[in-house]
Length: 281
Image 1: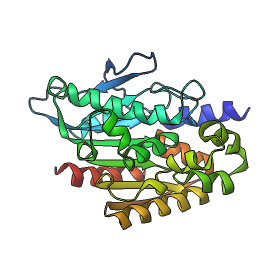
Image 2: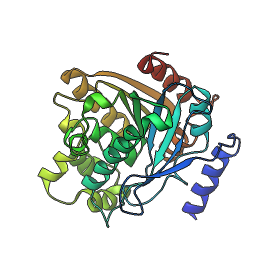
Image 3: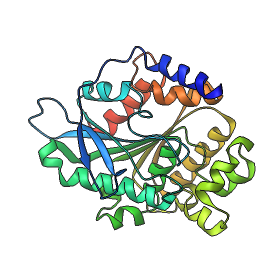
Image 4: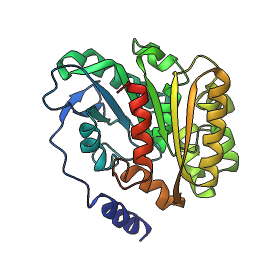
């Protein structure tokens, strides 16, 4: 029943979204999950910026087709950018470490095909929601994943982790909502050293990606985790903006993803303004 109500709410959030053009689907690895949809800027004659999105789903579910939200592709194309949304391998068949590696590998494939796709390889922002927020924050704070894909922090213009709540994994497993503890245990296991290694806040000693925007809704654990991540990044020298967005609980958590790109939604102009600063346009 809860799942049905959630599906109905998400459908309502997507109902007024404009229809996006068909994407180009690109593989970035040998596993069937290692694919992404790319929406190049129509008619582009010069390279344009890219927003690369990583879906959520508790590290165990979700995909680019059902967890991206319908507003993003058309909205970011309308802003003059290209947009992409990736699939990645899921727990328990893969580890969270593999998922972060997938994010970096997808970015590397995009950069390798940047000329063909008319994408400016110097202006790429990683955006992720929920578990995807954790993954883009991890890639933005632990350079090992980028280096394994032949990249470095300089290849990421900015990072937007959207309403994550597991930036400090040990703290979240200790104090986070009871309903999520099984999910965290399956994703992060019981080894404190591994949990710390997979925690963006605990990996945020310099160097990191240069710029972050951290939007969150009104969930106590999400607020605390976002603020702690921002503090750690600022201490290490990154430029960080926090954005507090209206919306309560699970509904607010879903809404910030499903309605990102809706001009009537509070987070959209905040993200748009930040992207214009980062992309210099």
